[in-house]
Length: 120
Length: 120
DNA sequence: AACCGTTATGTTGAAATAAACATAACGGTA
DNA sequence: TACCGTTATGTTTATTTCAACATAACGGTT
Image (cartoon, rainbow over all chains, first blue to last red; front, top):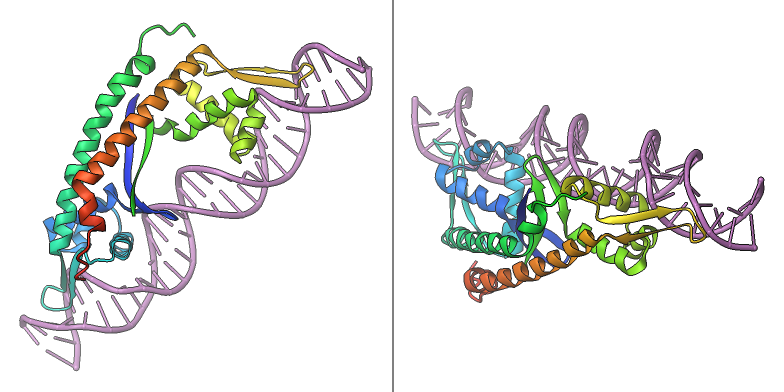
């Protein structure tokens, strides 16, 4: 039994505009230079991945990925300057929160949840 | 655009063994003395609520709610001693994490996400 | 111009999750 | 014993979410 979290950005109504899933996608795009490859590397299907970054960009009102199609390579995708900044910032945010959670779990819940006396 | 979280306890495979939803349910049970009423007050349907506490109890290996059926009142539900402890601990845990998140958001993301220069 | 791999979308199917419906069991009270 | 409101479950339907399938557009290369 362990504590888990889901982190995301939301805009009142719609949920999940940005989160760990999209973060990982950005990461993979940076690494592979292609949305197709990025999606494949995450086992996620291109269609979904494409829709995800589209949604995130719409929500943030800024482009995260610079995409090109055609050409000898078929096309490519790379992060925009802003995309890189978001990627890096989210990483720090994530780590910071994760750290806080583990400490809080330790302080408030661990003993109660995992603690010994199973009277019933 | 605001930061959100979902907190839960999980056990490797199965997810969502305990979380804010079940926390609120416990809260409502304590307040109303009845699972029926608790569910109704949360607009959740008795069947689901019942299954939820069942699942949580199984996951934690302990009873959270003392239930009785029949009698002049028809029946009743109240928290066990352990249920109360879990309830209170989760509340503190929740608040602590929420607080940490807001600080982390401020530090790492706010300006980037909500910040002015919308060049594109 | 034909080819290739990637981006760009619509559409359809499958799987997980939750809501809705339907009964049965219980046990004080009248 | 009949009644009532609640707990206890099974079952069936609706909703939401994601995977799968299908095509078109693009644009350097050959």
